[in-house]
Each structure stands twice: as C-alpha cells, then as structure tokens.
Length: 255
Length: 343
Image (cartoon, rainbow over all chains, first blue to last red):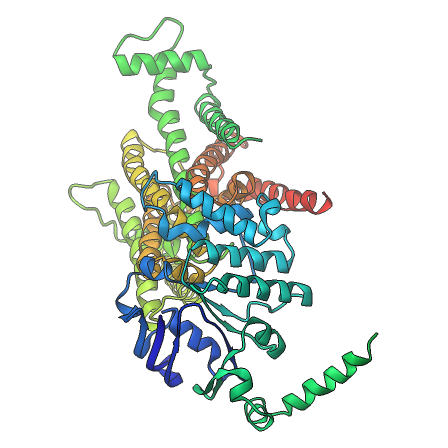
C-alpha cells in the first residue's frame, strides 16, 4: 500500500505540499482534483520519489527514499506525458524499455522470454500490436499516449501514477485511455492515481476523489459523499455543479 | 534492409575508407603493395622487388598511423556526441557542449605560449595539457551546475557548459591576441590536423576507446530511457544522477583524448549520431558502435580530402568535415524525413 504521512515537498526550498497525509489501498483507483497550482503534480512527483520530501512516503511500510530506483520501479510506474520525441524509437522498443528493471544489467544481457511475453501482452492490451514497428514520430498523439501507457504497464508495477495523461488527446482517445486504466485496476490488485483536469473524465476513471487546495488535501473519499455545490465552488472558484447541469440540459436537446 | 546486412555494409565502407586513406596521395599505393608492405613490416621480411623502400616508409610511418588515427578520432568524437545528445536530451549537443574543446584549447595554448614541456613526456606534453584542460572544464561545468541545481537537470548543465565554454574561449582570444609569434601554431592546433601522427598515439587512443565503448554499450538501455526525459528514466528505475555523471565523464574522456592528439575538429560529433540513428534506429546498444564506425570512416575520408584536394597544400580537416558533412547531413536527415512524409 502506498501511504503518505505528513509529507512536505516543493522546489528550490519552497514547499508546495504542506503536511499531506493519505493512503491508497491496493485495488483502488483515485483521481486527484483541484485548481491550477494547488499541488496535484507535486503530490504525484513526491509519491514517485521524483522530488525530495520531508515526512514519510511509505510503500508497504518502507520509506521510498531508502529504496533503490530499480526496486521502486517494480512497484510504482509513472505515466509521463512525453511531448517531444527527439530520436526515432519503434513502438516495440519503447514499450520494451518499460522492462528495464527486469532485464539484468550487463554488457551482453538482453530481454528474456518473459520480458518479450509481457511486452506482447501490454501491446495487445493497449491495442498497439499492429503498430509495433512504427516509429513514435509517425504516430498520432493518442497512439503515442497509449505507447507510454503500455510502457508503464510493462514495468509490471502495482501502482501507476498519471499526471494529466489526456492532455492534447481528442475526446475519443481520452475516454479510451481512461477505460484502459479502469480495466487494469479492475482486478483488485493494482492501484491507479491520476491527476485529471476534466472532472467528468476523472469520474469515469473513479469515484474516489482527493481534492487539493493550496498544497493541502482538503477532502478525500467517495465523490458523491464528500462534495456539494458550495465545496466545488470553493475549490474551483466557479459554480461547477451549475455549469455541469447547464451542459447536461444542452446535451439533452441534442437528438 | 536487415540490420546485419547494414552492419556488414557499414563495416565494409569503413574498411574501404581506410584503404583509400592509406593508398591515395602524392604517391599512390595499390592494395596488393599495401598488403605486401604490411606483411613484411610485421614479419620483418625484406620488401619484394618493385616496392621502393620510400613507398613502404610512406605507408607504414605516415599514411597508416594517420588514417588509423583519423578513424579512431572520428570514432571517439562521434560516440562522445551520441552520448551527449542522449544524456542531455538535446539533438544539438555534442562532445564540445560542455566546453571540452575550449578547455583543451586554452591549456594547449598555455603550453604552446610558455614552451612548457614535461621531462618524461616530451612531445606528449601538449596532448596531455589539452586532455586535462578539456576534462577539467567538463568537471568544472558539472560541478558548477550541481551547485545551482542539485538534480543536475539538463538545461542547467547545458547552460553552465555553454557559459563556461564562452568564458574560456574569451580568455583564449585574449591570449592569442598577445602572442603573435605563436599565432600560426595556435591557430593550426585549434583547426585540427592528423599530420605527424604516430603508432604510439594510435595505441593510446585505441586503449582508451575500447573500454569506453564497452562501458557505453553496457549503459545503452539507460541512455535509451534518458532520451525520453529524466523523470521517465527515474521512474523506470535508472539511478539517474550517478549514470549521468558516469556517461558525461566517459564522453568527456573520449572527446578530450581525441582533441588532445589532433586539435579541435567539429561537426563529426554532431552529424555522425544523427546519420547513424537514421540508418540503424536509436537503440544505443547498436547506435554506439555504429556511430563509432560511421564517425571513423567519415573522418578518414575528410582527412583524405583535406590533404589531397589542394595538394601539396593541406586544408584544415575541421573545415572539410563541415564542408562535406553539412550537405551530406542535410541530404540524409531531411531527405529521409521528406520521403517518410510523402510515403
């Protein structure tokens, strides 16, 4: 289980997260919500051990700071949003890089049968089997995001952290990506924690929500139970539920 | 085309370039004569009739060390460039980005101006000074960058390297301005040349190149991950800071050693990795040795042109690498992209 206890973290000596505590039990899917600059990305980066922190980030009771990166990578994967691909890699090679921590580090060592089988499985799961030989710069934004999802899955982690994974994707690909993640989490053994700006999309991923404001977790739990119109207004600075209802009325009129 | 066939073709092209580099010049030497001379030199047998001693001497003492040194230098610079581009995730990075050339030039210039010679090293003093200067500048750049940014992020490293490089270059310009009597020697060193290379130089560079290549191939997967970004590499399990420092040190060692022996030669370190990626893909376990092969072959050809195109005068090899390399690079890089787009 991934757990944060009184975590403070930030950049250049300035804390962005203040005394954050939360826990993500195995088999749960969470969306982190809040307005711009509230500390969502910093929370994810602290959970992945990508930035230094004070307090405790515990993985199955062990502080992640004391873990080797290879060991941590076997437990937590981060699905990054790689906007610029400078050098040509094929889809297959990119997904195989997700097996890095499983492949023995040596001069002549290569992927094992198990590594190849895992990559095949991840390609099939994300619908990329037919694109395996294509280079990343020949793919659409949606296909590329699926490649990085497949790479994160190939790590065979227990938890995947996602930071706005649907940016720049059209609506179809946004829904597809979120559905892939929900299916992955459905076996009850895997955990997904995703930062998403689109509240509707976040709710499609999970009804477990964690709301942040000014570097603190202000509420967490089942979305329906912890939110109301006034609370959403205080988080987003606008009448969010009113806006959603307006949108719903509009869509009801579309035949 | 299959990868094995591509490797065989590039290897054959590299060998042909070496043969051209050894056989073509004011005295042409045929392949069969080259084979006879090499056989006699290695076995200590007398030269066959019809091969003058002067021809054997030209091949064994001048052309062979020169061509082999050009090959090794091209290989070292190309590999250094490939590592810097991946490690710093910047297609424009090269072995010189962190100030290897400016540091090496400054210390070499100081040695030339002061006439400083180490007792046991003699003519190797200049090379050693260049090597130490290049390497120190890189470590100074990394040291300064780590003071500004504990995570050693790429932009910090690149900016620190460039600022330091400009600063060192400015000192070099001031030194050059006050040293009219050594001006020619300074300029010649800064433009690079393979004349006067010896078998000993080849041996030293080869002894450095082979272990460096093995280390880099071992860290190929780490470099693959680093090209996708630092967070990507970290979250995949790479001990980023340690690996990055190691890779930069190896790249600086390769570039610094090459610059120390032959002076500053640009462009090959920039274009070789890009051209090789276009042919073989970006997998570093293949890219590193193939960049070495391509860079080596390219440098031998550039040196051949430099010493024959306006013979008996000799051009600076750095000028030739840029003159030949720029259009070739444009053809390979942009031509391929256009054909991919049209497909």
